[in-house]
Image 1 (cartoon, rainbow over the protein chains, first blue to last red):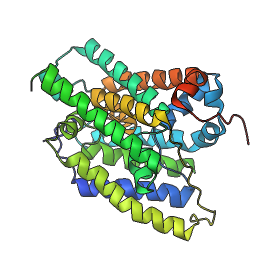
Image 2: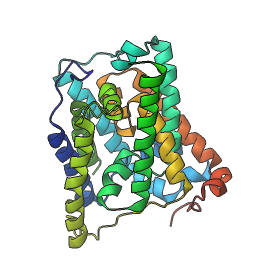
Image 3: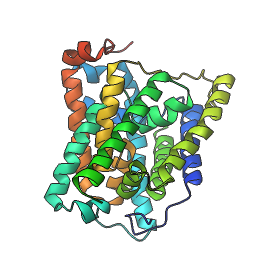
Length: 169
Length: 146
């Protein structure tokens, strides 16, 4: 199956997994940082929302590394598009277009609602695929196993419900 | 230092972009059990990170000689409920937090709405933290400089 981005052929999963492991270990060995991306939402919120949750020391001390790391994520995506055939605004959404097929406004609303679940859920669970799924599982942490099983289970149920029950694939 | 974080983030973002981890179809295919790609990526990452972490913690120091510190996460009711919310969002958007930023970089316009939603969701959680603290058995906040 080609990627949505320029119909590129994806790299092998073992290569991608090794790349992720390399960055995770480099962050710890070079800079003493625990990989975690969803905390970056807090970093952004901490600049504009004067509530005590965002004034935690954990937020203040982490945003000086996490903000550039997250900027790097976007740059990595940008370079990938440029090197893979050129950067251009993309509205296509693969399976979503074929089966559900909302227009631009509907797609934005759908994404905003999904984003609400991501932002609220990752803060409530203290992490996402990176901090719990990659780092936490690799470090044999029980909370990470619990949360990873929860989000994998919920993702499976949601996608199966959307594509096999609501919209027959 | 900021440049190092930027470089590591760029490498991470490029890998996510080109592997399918930031691709709506691949995320749905993972949850539909029609593709092994994402299970292979996450599985390989964990299988390689685990022994690396073990070795680094055994060595105990960073490259500059500082003691390695791994902050741990608490376990509470929110670990399950928050995980479930996040799973719903991951399925709906076809992006977890890292790929939201990667997709924005790639030019996927709808990812901006996902980011706006995620920031609003995180902001909402922060605003009501003290009110849901008892319900989810969340830890006390450590505020200010320590």
